[in-house]
Image (tube, rainbow, N blue to C red):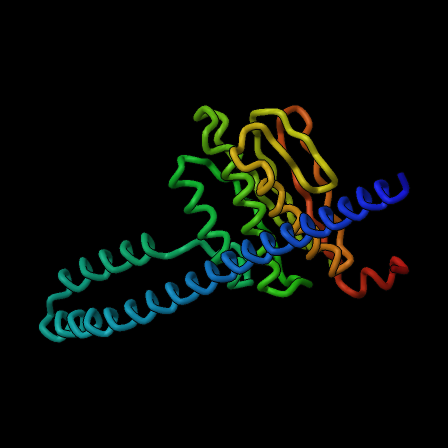
Length: 244
């Protein structure tokens, strides 16, 4: 009996270890894809700026030629078209944190392609988190939200996102409706809606690990079929004053 119990216990321990390793590998793979996405966005932005600079040189030559030949009306019209095109191409600048702007523009574009409305209210001056890890957090939160609402009726396809940065506190909040039953094991959410239930919740687990690294807080709720996630980080001065 003892040998049987010992064998069963050993098998359970090994299985749990295997599952933990599997989750860690899945999280690592997911974070790698997030970083790859970030790199591609930066490369795309760099290429677009080079193209705009190259085109601007030719445009300025044409405008100068109009002015030199007294074609002021043509120069004005060309200026107006150039300004209109620039406004159309320009991305939103939500904060002074360039990487955060890139990530938000990308995620909001992904949502809008699926006819998902995004209410975005961001006020951030600096972030106590590494930029790479900030992208992982934002990417995972948005990916989960988009997955939850993309198949809902039109009137429910909405994501509310905000960042507040008062007095040494960096607070990220996201909320969205969802359908289906949900079961939660710590920060690992399972839902009957997704085909691969084991993969669901890995994004939140990844976010949780980053939060723990920086001694932050994460709050998750899913009441009344509305998922809400709040991630809070503190500057060192705030931690010291709180005695943490």
